Image (cartoon, rainbow, N blue to C red; front, side, top):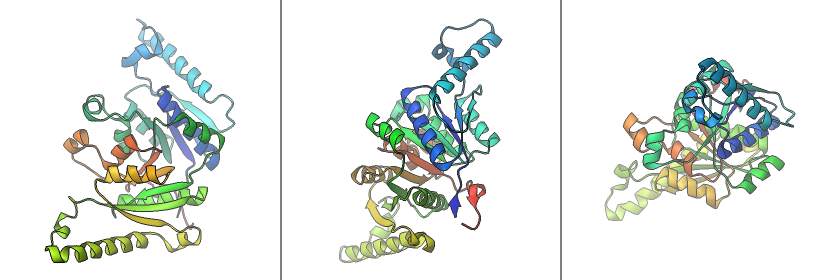
Length: 311
């Protein structure tokens, strides 16, 4: 099934990193013929970023909203696409999620500042929260090399797409999105599964003389499962490259992306407990904060409404 992306929301806080996300939002909207909603969430508790404070709350809201509209219009200057500005007031993640629901968004494009450790715990991760609350996939852009961004403006496309697969329903949908985008952009498709020792520890405990044979059997089974996930019709236009990696998922996927010059990583979002999410973060969030390219996160509870029947 081909995934249709008709309505795209692109968020910006007017920082250099988030304006890189705007570059991708504009490029995607142009390529896919989608409508772009350019969104800046106004947080009046951080009024200093908009200039001096005001004693009159209504005047403050009006001035700040005008400021935001002007900056959004400046970012879209000279762009010939269907777009609309959004300037909601409130908490960033909540307002973006609400806008995605109201506009029936098929995709949200946002930036992550790549925070990790204590700083991330204290300040929070808007991108990670969006991964778990949006009714549609999230396209995450981390601070990228300026030459890379310049190339996106000149000639946009994904030459190589990596889809991470853990055989969950989330990763099955991630593969669907990855294949759909690969068909759209005529991309090379890489499908990877990471063998994490902590997950496969019970299968990797045989006696020394049986260990090598057992591990080879496991690898063979996993390769067959990876190959079996690709629909037959996809082989008519691409030859997916399947690979098995060993180690921590976020580290191995990031390294693979660097070594193979991947342009887009597509991953499913899996659930974690609150403590795990706060102190560790999901694999998808970790990859998004470290990857050398954008990351598309997909949840299996959404996306079916955006499929084109019979394709």
